[in-house]
Image 1: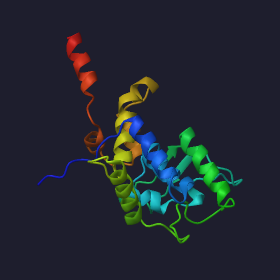
Image 2: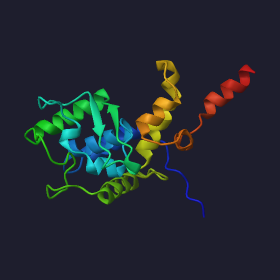
Image 3: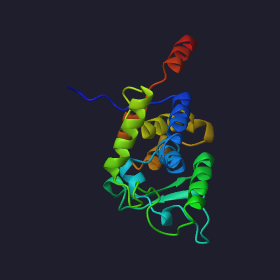
Length: 193
């Protein structure tokens, strides 16, 4: 049986997820996990492997971009991702709540250690199940990020190659598989023919 790709979420679903996650222990950490997925397109292994050195400036403040190092990225595809304002705000608040650490993991487990990728996957699974969001997985945020980026990239003067680089994909074909079509846009296109 073929496995379906992770569901792409609507903005209202993302807001529901953030509201839901705020009601549990470590609400600031939870928001950062969600936003790293939906606003930076990070994989579970990248979220788990992210360290403060990858998000801080040399003066200790939160940087304007995330530096995904090769050792945490799939296939060693390190990259720089501009930090979305919502993500930067959440990371800043979380960083302050932890006493401004300069090193170590960004995402901490319940016991204060490094959270592993499998725990990130399970965390998303439990949150989606609690909200009744079927067809979602830890990859839904990444797929939503890539789809939304592909839909608006032409407005910025960029191309799918830029989305490919942000996603850390070696091949544009891989990026294209993540992009969900827009039925409304297709209907509008056909009506203009």
